[in-house]
Length: 191
Image 1 (cartoon, rainbow, N blue to C red):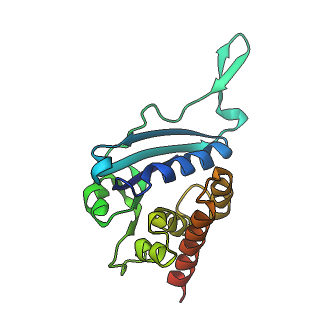
Image 2: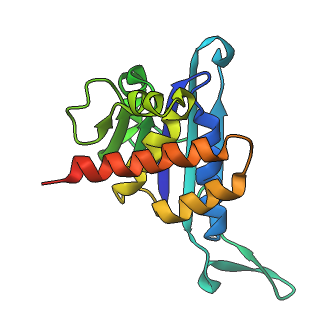
Image 3: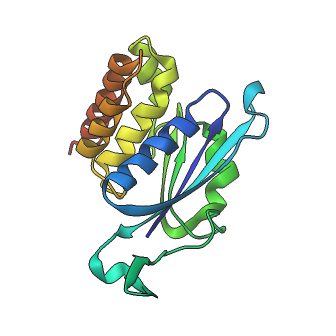
């Protein structure tokens, strides 16, 4: 199971990338639970999503329910992640890292969108997206950056397929931002 916190402010696309990650998990036949806290999102307030992703379902993951029927065993019962239990934190806003870091377990990874990108898991995703004339796509830049690390349950290639299927008017802009995040990850990982 993987537990992921996605943090940002209203308008940064926290809910959009939460849904992309949830769809990627469903594609892999995994159990998924999400919980979203919108707060004052319309006024630039805090938004946080809790995403729990189970292991891929297998025949052994089915439980006998009687009368020869089988149903999936669920790996979790609550969509909320307790402090100190998250495997990954995606902070779309620099303040999100300070506010929600307590959710991470000691070996958890935090990926943050910050102007001071000295940390190997930090990236100025807003600057990269702005260079593409798509500042609202900083969320996808950071998501791709985190996926390239291998710390999330799915691959960047799979996520790009999910993003393609999502379609919409801004598909090309979203794909460009996603590719820019992958490129930034390759640059940051250069020896």
